[in-house]
Amino acid sequence: WSSKSRNRATTGALGKLFLPGLAVNDVEKIRIVGAQDKLVIAQSGDTWVAPDKYGYPADFQKVKSALMKLSEIKIGQVMRLTEAQKGSLKMKPPVAGNTTESGTAVELRGANGKMIAALLLGDTRRRKSKAPGGFESFGGGYPDGQYLSPDGGKNVYLVSETLDDLSPKSREWLETEIVNVNSSDLAEF
Image (cartoon, rainbow, N blue to C red; front, side):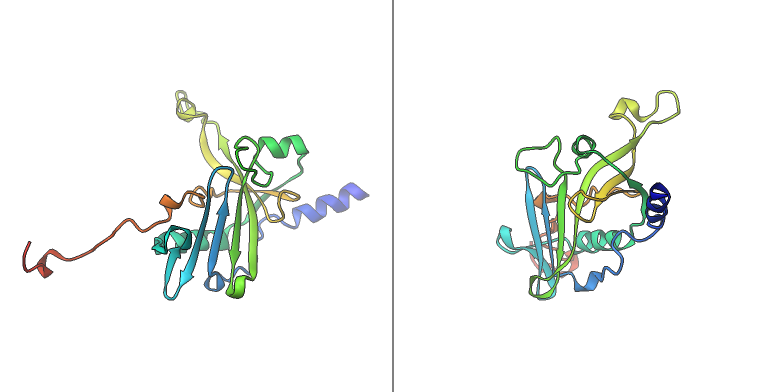
């Protein structure tokens, strides 16, 4: 009887949004912490900036894309993991220097620092290619999902998308185009 009720509870989550009700327009700050790096991107007026990098502008398209992706992710599989399995899938909160078991923590905050959502990104699931000479020679398969948790690793879900773009490395979030001047606007070179 208890296993039937547990199975019914987990199957009810399948296909539902991972972060239901995520209002992307309310997000004013993104904080991403990994085992080696951490990043904060925040709204400043009409632009997104990296406060830790002297207010350098962030790439708005990257911020928008990441938030939209988070709002659309659906649960594909509910995982029941032991502590050892959580470590091997990087489903443990980040600990400085522990890159073998630590996941990546992501916080989305709104006005006055109010927590909107928090999640833990685990390892990417890699699917083996069935074709001879497939992707195995390039690192063991192709990515076809990622392990996520909305509560620090207590409940773990597998989703079909990968969230590699939610990196804690600041260089991947900063605006790379410094100046954009049309050549016809230049009077003298």
